Structures are given as C-alpha cells and as structure tokens.
Image (cartoon, rainbow, N blue to C red; front, side):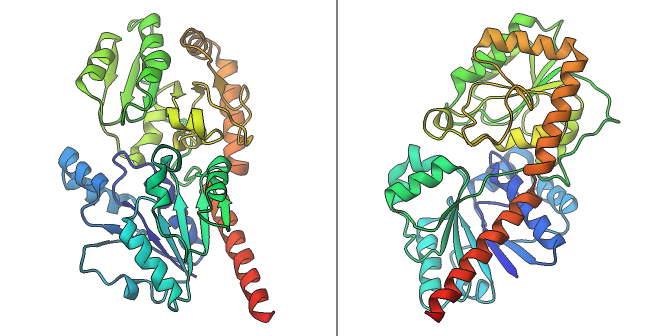
Length: 373
C-alpha cells in the first residue's frame, strides 16, 4: 500500500515530538514493503525555528540519518489532489491547516479511492476545543487519537464515529541501549519549556531536587528549547547544565551517558487527558535508562508504575528516589530490565504499525460488507 502522511514536519523535530513517532512508523512501513512519503508545509513553525536556531546543516543531518525517508514540502500552489491520487491511505495530522483538512476531505468525498485518516497527537481537544471543533472532518473515514481519553472526547463531541486509540511508541531502530557508552553524568532531562504548561512542575520535580542534592554530588543536564531567561537562571542557580536543542537521533547517546532521567508531563494531560505519557517515556525506557516520573495516571495500564519506572508524588520524594537509583545498582538494573521488556513486547513502532494495519483491515472489511448489502 502507498501511505501519504500530512505532517507539520518530518525533517524538523524542534519542539515537535510527533516527528519522532512518524519517522519510526514510516521506516517500519517501508521495511514491510509498503510505500510511505510525508508532505509538510515549506514554512512550518518547527522547521522555521530549527533553521533559525541551528542552521541549514540540520536538514542535511536528517537526510544522512534517515536516508530512506522522503518528505516533500508544499506551498500554496501545490497540487494536493495529484499528490494523493494514487494513495491507498492518507493520514492527516491535526496541526495541518484547517483549509487543507477540509480540502482533503472534499477530495475523498468526490471520488478519492484512498482511506482518509485524521491523526490527533495533542491536547487541543481540551485546551483549544473550538479549534478542533471547527475542523471539517465529515468526510474522514477514520480518526486516530493517541489516548483513550482523547478518543472519548471525540466521540462525546460528535467529531467522528470511527475513532480509534493509537498511542505513540518508541522507534526501536533508533532508541536502544548503548552499554558501550561511558557514563559522563548522573541526571538528564530532555524536554522543552514550551508554553508554561509545566513550569511549576519543572521547578518542583527537577530544579529543586537537583539543588537539594547539590551540584557537587549530582551532575545534572537539561536539553530542550524555548527556555525563557528566568528558567535558564533557575537552572544555573541549581547547578544544572543547559545544553539547548538536541536532535532526536542523538538522544539515545545522551541517555546512555547518564544514569537516570525524569518524566515531567504537561499539565493538560495530567488534569484532563489521563493515560497519555509523552513520547519520551517510551524512548527513555527503550534506551535502558532508569526513569522517575512526576505524577500521572496510567489509567490505560501501558506500563507497570513502580516496576517499569518509579513515581514521585512530591519534590521531596523525587529527591529521595534520585538518590536511591544512583546509590542502588540493583534497583537501577531492575528498572532497566523491566522497562525494556515492556517496550519490546508492547510499545515499539512495529507494534503500532501492526495496530494500524488491523484498523485498516477492519475498515476495509466493513466497507466491502456495506457494498455487498
């Protein structure tokens, strides 16, 4: 089958976690003999910021790292109808321009022979409900939501009937343990500051614990973007090294160079969309680094909290658990083994492609049955 993915960006992962997952899914589809290309706006926010922050060499680095992946950029003159004319499956990410979302739906309605899918991997259904409600999804065959609570939001709002849960996962070809890499640090957090959605939590579960343990007893580093001056000053005072943006392809080595990491979920997920972790949870566990998480409700039982990773209910508890993991190698080894096993048996991009193909088979079977009737 030929898959066409409309994405905010495939080549840029600057504050754009969906690119991580899509790259893995596309590689898995290609490995299985399918065709897969991405289409992205030539002036996307993520791509524009990456070029301003890091320069054009980052696009060349993407091509070297992912030579098998193809992404075509489009502008206002692009012929979308021609681009999808021979597609079997068209997947449209929720950051796609609303006018284009509607245009692709029209192409499906007037004779497109492809299955048209809308893919939501964000919290706007809660935090910017009117924006999602304003999208014209009437002619979309399927909707993929990256959590069951998000799927229920779509169903309750009447935004679609054929809505399926399709969680993100780790690209196992990239995210894997690297035992040969020398440990250079203790604690690392890889995450973006963003729109003040977790600023208090970053202070409580990262900055304050690092400060309590002390810069001479704990080597801590942070990688990510969109940190305002006040946040950078707080990191400096806590003795935390800030390294700025990191290409996702370099994250496995960064994890391998450190002994423990943390997960700090964004507030909209904790308060309104339980059961949805950030993709970094999947990626960290796939790399075999012990993980300690700030509170979130794993109501879908994706993991086994306390076994695959530890949960810190307060900043004081985070401080204690960091010390425990760093001082108890048996504890660290048990977390590594359990987390790896969970990822490898349930949460790789290969598992998600299996799920996607089953959803498509089910949809096609229903369509054939309706035609026969």
